[in-house]
Structures are given as structure tokens and as C-alpha cells.
Length: 108
Image (cartoon, rainbow, N blue to C red; front, top):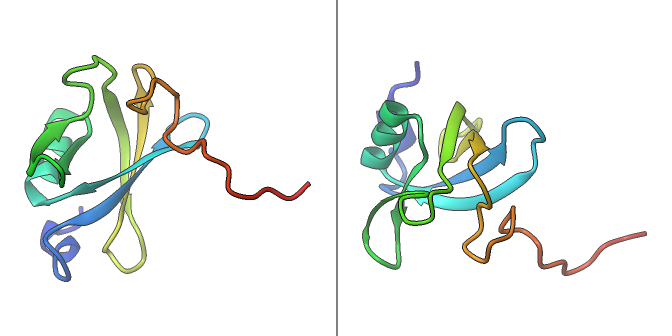
């Protein structure tokens, strides 16, 4: 298992990409700190650091749409995490399955 100290050498807060475990669809991007990662590994649900509220939050604590973490990997530079999750429902606070729905450009 990766030493968590490696993840937070460059910054106390790192991005975490959430991807559907079965479809591989990108669902959201959040930020995490060491404590949130430890809680994620312990509870098997995704925890984040809320930059706007300045506190830890467990995705789904108010909506009931938890992200059940099936696999955690890091990128080659160990400064970004990828959580492969099974969502209980919509991931986006707008009620959509994914937070990525605003198309800027698309080639035919």
C-alpha cells in the first residue's frame, strides 16, 4: 500500500477524480486532504475537504447518495487520486448523474 506521506509532499490538498466503477464515466472532481483519505479508506465511502465550507464532508451525508469506494489509485506523480466508486444515486448536487454535463465543444 502507498504511504500517504507521498501523496501530500507537494500540497496539503490534492484533487480526487471520481469515476463510476462499472461504466468508467467521470462523475465529479473534488479535493481531499490526508484526514479525508484516511476516512475514505476506513469507511469505504468518499470523503472530501470542502474548500467553500472549510471542513470535511462525506459525499452523500445529506442526500443519501453515497459514493462507495471500490478502488483507489494515484497518478504517476502521486499528486492526484482516482476513486472508482459505485454511486447510490446522482453524484451532482444538481441531481444529474455526473457533474460533467456542460459541453463547451464537441466534434462530429
